Image 1 (tube, rainbow, N blue to C red):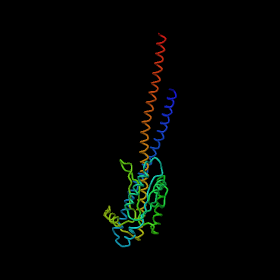
Image 2: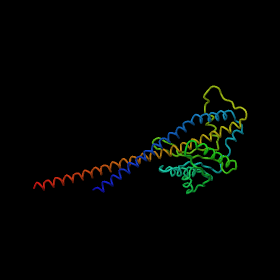
Image 3: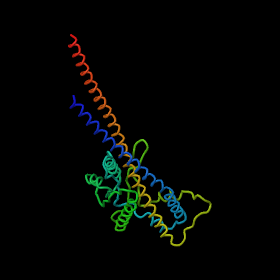
Image 4: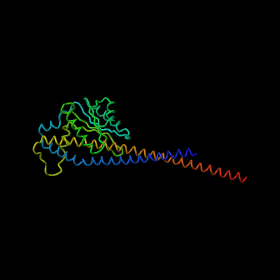
Length: 293
């Protein structure tokens, strides 16, 4: 009996230690989600400002140069930027994204090349029929997102200038209430006529209409660069928030399983102790009856 009771004590102690680790990881994941979601929300006003700037420019400029600077070719090689995860305990995070990328790009004509953000999703994309190109390291903090986006923009512009790609699509997971996250995609380039019309339809918030001054072409390029930067930054932050949401859900399931295991172990331990006490009482009573007889 003592060996079994000792074994149960060790199991209960191990389960308690594991529960402490899980609780710590759950708290870290929850804190990370808040940081990345706050980063996304903090960009909303700036994103709206950039949109208003583009709307003001496109609403005033109807020259052919303006249109061709915004929307170059709409055909040719497609470059896809795919955000994944390099951390564990995120379930099917990368697998769901790869399946979505393959399905979405499979419906588009032409040759495709994918740029993976993360080593694990890079290896999964390499197992598909898609051509893998440049890869990037995932940031481990909010401050590391900006340098990453700068690297992606430099590579994107370099390949567009040399004609290696003509279109750019963006793939990432986005947090979603009730489903943890959902894969989404966005066409970044070229900025076509439909994109122009949607921006031109945005009403100016005041009665004083803006006017583009000095070099209008440089103004447009600056606004487009900011638009691309904010789009990529939001995609990265949303992907990291989704990753931590997936980890938080995994930790919550693990915590529930550990609680159930601890309940079973404690019940077995108390049942074993009660059985031992009953046996000892029976021996005492039996000895007393034997002495009395």
